[in-house]
Image 1: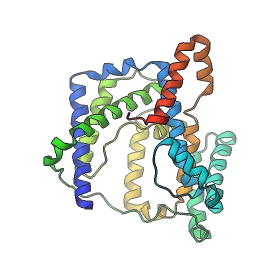
Image 2: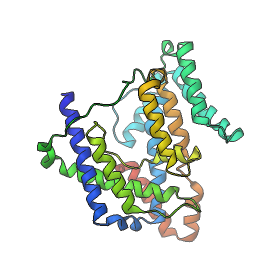
Image 3: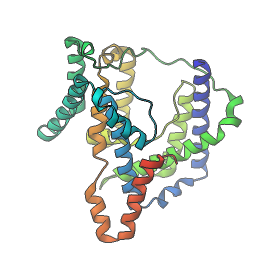
Image 4: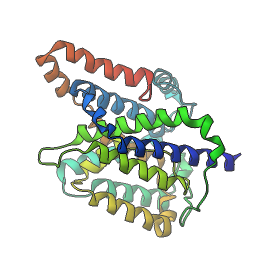
Length: 302
């Protein structure tokens, strides 16, 4: 029942938000200090690998039931004989456009330009007729207000607690991974509280439970974002899209979205960091590899 699913999702988001907000009030943000740099390096690289593999089927036009990392790799290899060459051309063109633009015109808004060109190409050249799948119709306007189902709270608290822990761990890890010299110091408790309030507020509008995202942060950082104003711009652009631009995004190829995510997820994997860790201490290098393997084989939550 779609209505029951929506109600359950809203309840989950509300509970995750409440747990995060309470954790912030109890000042549990210090837990982020126990994430070591080698483990963080491995965690980030593992996330990058998992995200890339997750996007490859969209890049190739393959369809299968998603599973674990090994399962997905096996399905991709097994499905290579059925890939869509037109979809691969669109995805490959997206990746090439982003890389060339970043290399030769780093000040240009590469994702905006490349995605815009791909939307125009799909709309006017009829790529869908050649098997290129598009995002499709996106609802316009604001989401409707709803109420979570409080009777589900007892059954859903283990999932909510796990998601809240993972949300904070990834948010904290992403913050530490992307902080640059000259940036203001991280404030884990503020991150906890802000993420909690965002989940609580979003829950009443059908938002899914969430937190800081690695691939989104990579795209944001590489686009030149330096302050919270970047998220204000994103929010305004999202509102404009919901009211005015949604019909145009219907012509966006899924392979283009996959290409954008892949390009910026590659930036999460820094082999030089692993070499530096190995030079300093072999034991820490092993822990970095364990973190990579853990994310890949067990998944980020486990």
